Length: 185
Image (cartoon, rainbow, N blue to C red; front, side):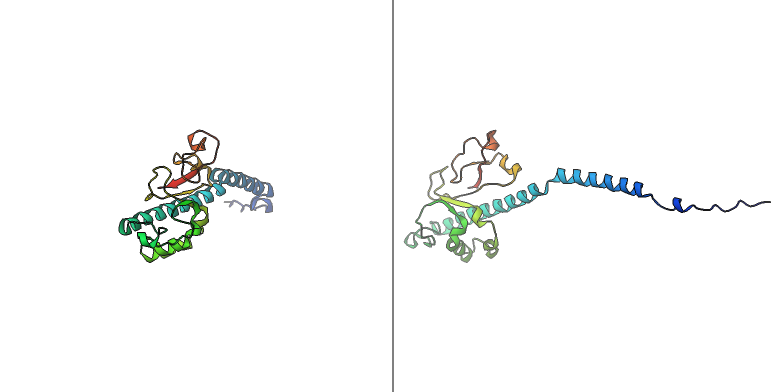
């Protein structure tokens, strides 16, 4: 009985051809480009910065509410009135960058209303503080606003204010074309 002779592999049948490898690489490149277009890394970075600013704004407003409930004054009010006189620009704030209120932030940290890590936020200059709140007119109400960088946050329904916290006109979130501000109050 005769055995089947062993098959001899041709050199060309051992692996993939260069063309097959190029086709696979092209397909992978197309898939990667489609994935990047879907994710949009710049928008994702802007969303992350907007979320950080939302947290900064909410923490500062909340800290001032707690401070006011204990001292019956805001930190920038005169010490004779229960405040800490921590802002040299007066007792009202008209769109003052949060980074200009370092004395007040220090007061809030010292009194335990803010954590020490609050000063490490690199977003303080992007948030502005207004007091009294133009929405309520109440001197005890503070509003902190920032202009979102992400397109998704610009179209969010609460992004509808001017820098000072007044109602904005023609905001993207209201169907308009203007970039507006998101505010914590």
